[in-house]
Length: 158
Image 1 (cartoon, rainbow, N blue to C red):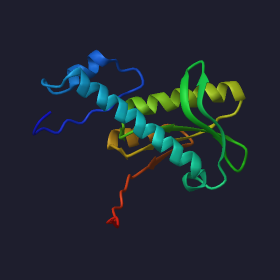
Image 2 (image 1 turned 60 degrees about the vertical axis):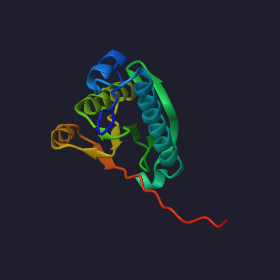
Image 3 (image 1 turned 90 degrees about the vertical axis):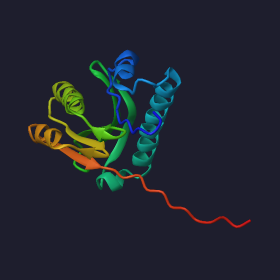
Image 4 (image 1 turned 180 degrees about the horizontal axis):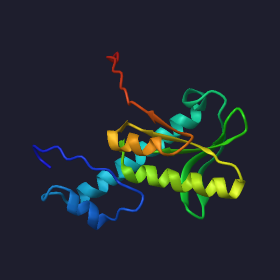
């Protein structure tokens, strides 16, 4: 890790052996554990911020549940829009990958089948590469939203 910058993200089904193979040779199990914990923490913090400011994501959204379990997986947020339509919200710490599109498509398909009408989806990530944007265009009702983490520093008085 020293003098190198390694970027990787965790998908919903990645295991630690795959992760270890993707990391620099000198990475320790401790390095991997710390990365996983910080990624999960970022996603939880992002979820907390969105829940606290749901109107910033889209005016009129009402939270139904967090970490909703279904037969096809656990989705991050479930909401209703101002028109009463179900909205599936999936969050990604870092840039969204192709697997993110497949994941939210699975949730949208399942809820559409069970509710009898198609839900909308919002995928929130720090960025979306061109291939991911192309894939998202094929899913009706899917909106991509980017987030930005910003820090502000002020000198503390002693």
